[in-house]
Picture: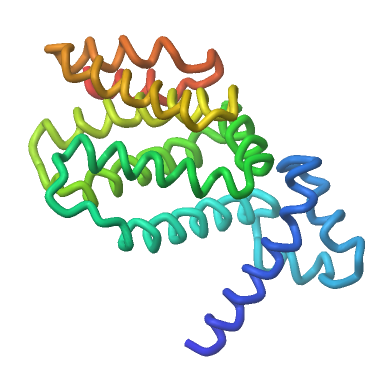
Length: 215
């Protein structure tokens, strides 16, 4: 256990060190070379802790961001709010956390749009919407389980893209409210998914595949 804790701490320190390079150069094969350039970490150490190179580091970053979100979410006073308000507050919490390192989030977002990262982005998106629904109090196990997550995946992705594009919290909040309102008025699940997913950037294929699975 002590070894794992020590290893995890080193990985966190490496991630912290890497952020200044990611914000400028993004996620690519040169990242480890840049990290090791100050002689603080050897390439061999980086490869040992992150066997798949920057891909492993990217996955670790997403995991750490998720842990941070869960910790902050526990402190929210969701109380007796209606479910859709809880979902709204949780998405806004995500954006507040993202705002702390927007350039890295932006680089990460557009990296995950590329086809080669489909598995990573799909898993990350599913995990995000699943946890939002769980925290909001949804414990359904029937078809609604999948439909709610597919719909929220579309809403969440379009809202994050809107925020990245305009850097305006007020505008993004209004956009989020509009999406939640529109979904509540659309009777059929498939119509909901198709309607919102048209607002996503062209490169974002994940939702189409999620929708295809549901057909």
